[in-house]
Image: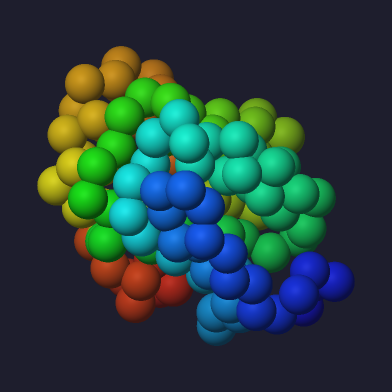
Length: 126
């Protein structure tokens, strides 16, 4: 397992972010809003997690609002991981708000991250 703390829990202005070990990687749960006020924190966290060998599963089921600023760090990290052939970043159980913003973005941006309908399914895929 990684040298990253096994449990991480932080509240930003608009989101609750927690990290915990999963069967074959790390599970990052984000609740609340993916927007400009949460983007900087997510960028720093996801960039750090890119250095680790484990896949990262991001559970977005509890996102109530998402815009391009908030989803940007997630898609950027997925793209960087894919480009460097690092362990994957998998979006799981995306809320309607997340599906809406992903639908508005180009297919290239959405293709950067493999999606699964559930955390359990993502663990099987990864």
